[in-house]
Length: 141
Image (tube, rainbow, N blue to C red; front, side, top):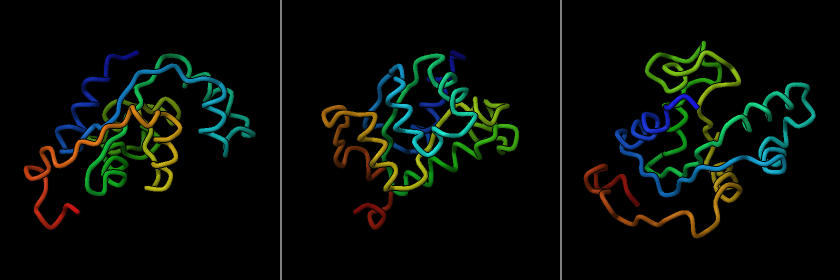
């Protein structure tokens, strides 16, 4: 563990995103096989799985207007060597695989991933808490 959890979490919070679920967990073989089902047959999957199980991970459910798009932009491209400076991967990664963060690729996938990593009672409804200081009235449903 590189001691980056607080820094990464604070970047999301400083942006104005809200963390409505978070936990540290050790990923099981079964969970990784489900999460990366599209990669299980690929020759690099055993290395990916070993990498993901090397240390516990922090799973987060993050919300905000266009949260998936914003989180992906903040994460940067997958390969840390190609990621722009200022992105999480651009600042903290030199690897395609050891790239520090995962970001869902769309709202549908985000819902599936939230259900995979969190129980219903582990994701909190934060309501209108702090929304008016983050967004214009017409940006929030």
